[in-house]
Length: 116
Image 1 (cartoon, rainbow, N blue to C red):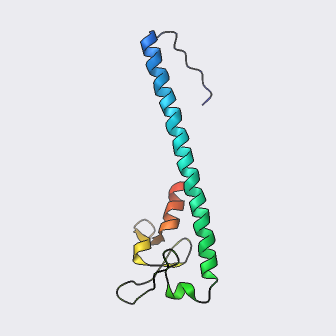
Image 2 (image 1 turned 30 degrees about the vertical axis):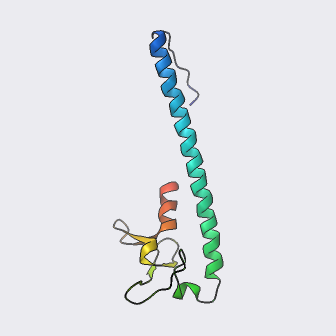
Image 3 (image 1 turned 90 degrees about the horizontal axis):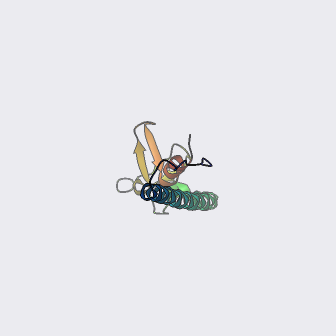
């Protein structure tokens, strides 16, 4: 960003095309930045909700911290997230082959948004 383009060696049509591409790129960057900001905001809200739920007496031993569905032995077993250590159901987590463990949906999004 902040670089000046030297379009003097191009025809008017070529210069217009380059400017359209640059403008489209700027619009896409702005849209992506807004999307990432919304995702970060949603993750902060999810974290706040999780903290509130975890303060309830043994809530996370009985129910998923993400969707609040109750755990059952065979149909909906609890799995511990590697990052936040909350218990989550099978619908709210995915297995990370790299880390050899489960990641809840919120921690997975956090990993995709924030560089490690």
